[in-house]
Amino acid sequence: MAVDVLLGLQWGDEGKGKIVDVLSAGYDLIARFQGGPNAGHTLEFDGKKFVLNTIPSGIFFENTLNLIGNGVIIDPITLKKELGKLKDAGHDLLEKQNLVIAKKAHLILPTHQLLDAASEKKMGEGKIGSTLKGIGPTYMDKTGRNGLRVGDITLPDFKERYQKLADKHLAMLQALYGETPDLTERTAEFFAAIDLIKKFPLVDSEHLVNNYLKEGKKVLAEGAQGAMLDIDFGSYPFVTSSNTTAAGACTGLGIAPRNVGEVIGIFKAYCTRVGGGPFPTELNNETGEELRRIGHEFGATTGRPRRTGWIDLPALKYAIMLSGVSQLVMTKADVLSGFEKIYACTHYNYLGEKIDYMPYDICSITPEPIYKEIDGWHEDLTGITEVSKIPAKLKSYIDFLEAELGVPVKYLSVGPDRKQTLVLH
Image (cartoon, rainbow, N blue to C red; front, side, top):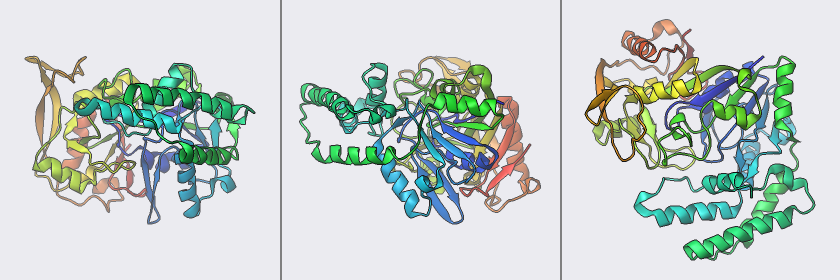
């Protein structure tokens, strides 16, 4: 058996949570492999809506185990609130016993979040567009070998370790930003959340995942954010702090590259981005506003309005190449219903040259998109349950994308509910 990997191919917000939820019944283990509570995976079914930040999107299936992997960074306070909301909605994960946490996952401290906010504030106009969840500073401590991990919470001197790192952060806040915050309330909240985390099974996740494979069980690795936010290959420096491509599943779960099976890449029928950074196909006009309105394009975690634009094929081809994507999922096709014409960026005009690939620098040098005009469709897609009912012009759009990208579009999402998903191949 191999681990299938599901990830986003754009700048995040592609609809990963919904698709993981749709696929979960066919897997024994769903494992988040990177990112932190900056993720907002939205799931809708039975008239209810859930937004998951850290917890994998398979937790609504009784026979599916869910793992927060070692590559994830965990804010205990956010996780406690997330667990509380699920419990209030009738999903007590302690009772269901279908959530386990990797001992090697790193912890976000309240001071990480203060450092994140102070850094963004100081950068002013040049800010990254951080979610202010403490993601960057926590990964900095991880790579700087200063971090605290979930496994540390069982040690008798954990509070001393916490205080040592927090004191370091407080000294940085004072020296770099002139801030001297009072942490009394946040620290109490942090340790209350730690007490809850201790009630869940803390596991050596690399052994868990590989034992599942040895036993012939099916594993799905769930990514967060999107390929164009990858720390190595994204639109640097306007990126996240982890590897969002398929390679991140190997380091984020402890699996060998040869044990990666299907790589399922998700993209919107158009494109969005949250925060700062380059966005070649962005529409700063009425069409962009219309896409935002119809698509309800506001961050699931932050509530920030998303920037909108047409689909970007050079960026998609780049993401597909980096992760070895073997099948595609197109989401939000329903949002484009009613547009007389839609457009797909097939090339860039970059420094006077026509190219169809992602160049090194799209931050200081803005690529000019070259578009192909495509006939739109007017039919309402949200009630379609059979592939044969897909409008001919939408089918033509999908055929065009498959030919351009060289990968089949296996799933089509025509609405937010889990039932609004069609299997095309």
